[in-house]
Structures are given as structure tokens and as C-alpha cells.
Length: 266
Ligand code: FES
Image (cartoon, rainbow, N blue to C red; front, top):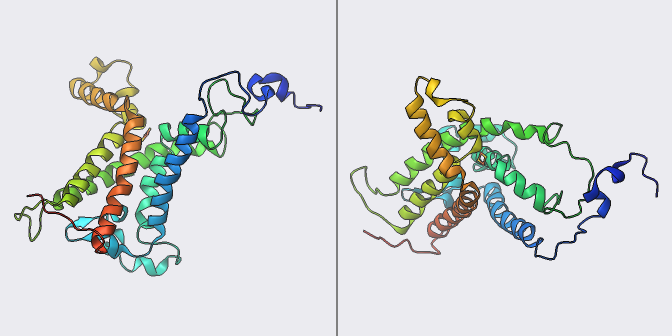
């Protein structure tokens, strides 16, 4: 068959044929596990996002991260102006969802596992053309920095929710249930993920050629070092935090519906 564009002649991975490789290891395992992991994680949160019953996201002082911050409670009339499919959770989840969807790590994960382009190193790819993220639609991924600003704000609310989960009848009435610990770990894991963001690292000091010429050099270098440390484990925290957000929502959903008891720890 003729190849008028000359594409097959230019790209050996495309010319080899889709998924053709000389590799003998289990190269397909990682993309397969990624599809399963992202499918379960994002699948659950999408299901939770479209449910229209925020009462199952509350239990005593617990508030599910899916409904935090509770924008629908601050502006209850807003729901009347929105289409019926927009649930209270969707009012919030577009921001952390966009943050994850444009995250540098997740991009690599779903480009490889869902687009299979390529599925792994030295494995035949389905399309020849690759323009990186310089053209529409992938150029939109550059919006990640703005989602990062929103994610940091939402993180502050999640910490507030986590600390509030240790109170009962007032700010001085401290009680810890298992759900308090679940919410605390949720804030911790999300912090480890969010504060290791590549865009945040760039903003804090990654763009500087020399820290010593900057007036706040010591502080910035320390902050940059901390973000860099988290950034080195960004993939790990991306998975842990994704799983824990889903688990936290599920836990509060089960407790609030009476299917699970929330033991008091101290
Ligand atoms: S690069 Fe992953 S959260 Fe920013």
C-alpha cells in the first residue's frame, strides 16, 4: 500500500506496526495496571460526582472531600440555575479533576495506557504523528498551573475539614473516631501529592538560574528543596492520594447511611 505522507518511512516505531516489539519482558503489564487503576479510581469518583445526595457526604463533623468546600451550601440558589445533571459534588470536583487530568505524571500514564502512543519504550505505536503538547487539543494541558492554584486553595479547606473531624460539640470538645483519622490521612496524602507538583516547583524557584541573587534566597531554596523532595515521589503520591480520596468518600458514605459503625478511638 502506498504511503503518500511518507510517515511510515520516517517513524520506525510506527512502521513496525502497532504493539510490535522485540522486547520479551512484560512491557504490557504497566499500561494494563494503569488502565485498571485509573479506571477504578476515576470511575468511582465520577460515579460519586454525579450522585445528587450530598447528605451521604456528611456524618457529624465529617465531610467527604467530594463535597468540600461545600459551595452548594454557601450558595444554595446556584443549583436552581444549573442543568439537572450538575450535582453538588460536580460544583467542586471539576477543579481537582482538572488538576489531576492535566498533571504531568497522569498525562504520561494515560498517554501510554489509554492512547498507547507508545504503550512502552520500543513498542510499535498506532499513530505516526506526534506534536507533543504544542497543538490543539493537547496544548490545553498547559492550563495545569491554574488548576494548581485552585488545588492549593481546596487543600486548605480539606485541612480544615480534617481538623474539624476531631471535634464534636464545639471546637474544644475533642474526640477521635476512625473517620477523623481517615480524613486526616486524606489531607496528608493530598498535601504530599499537591505540594510535589511540577508547576509549583517551577513557581517556587525552578525557573531561577541562581538562588543567591534572589532577595528571599534562603527561604525559597528551602521551599524548593522540600517541593523537589516530594516531586521525586510524585507518582507514588498521585496513586496513594487518588485511592485515599475515594476511600474517604466511601467510608463517610457507608457510615452516614448506617452500613458501617464509626468506632471512637479516644
Ligand atoms: S505535575 Fe502532577 S500535580 Fe502538578
